[in-house]
Length: 139
Image (cartoon, rainbow, N blue to C red; front, side):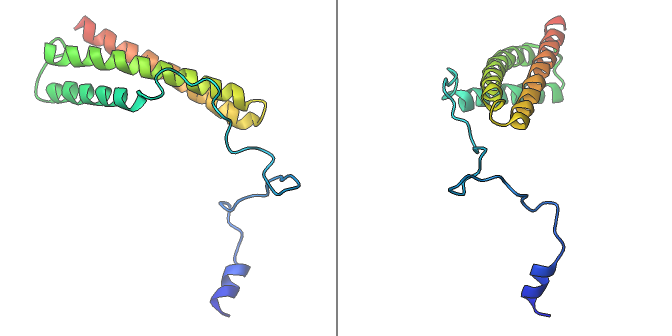
């Protein structure tokens, strides 16, 4: 038995692509993307704002690791700046994913529902962020 026979007669694996319904031209009936019709305002600044959040987090966590308390300015200021920027970025992401979910629901219900789950996760992360900011302000 040569190598080609082993490859063609092997077991069918779960990860292999399943059958996809196709149109007359051989294209999938469900598109791979739905275009974004109304981009959010932070679309171009998303990465740069995320870098600000990252740097603020690094400063605050490093200060805490070196023995600073939550009420020290070296912790409090980066936490407040970073959390404000993170809240804005997260709200922008919620809007984008919500619009994406609404665009996908008529096309592919499973993809739309998956995006709605991500909206719920981001809303929960905003609640956790609010709790963390509250802890820093109460210290």
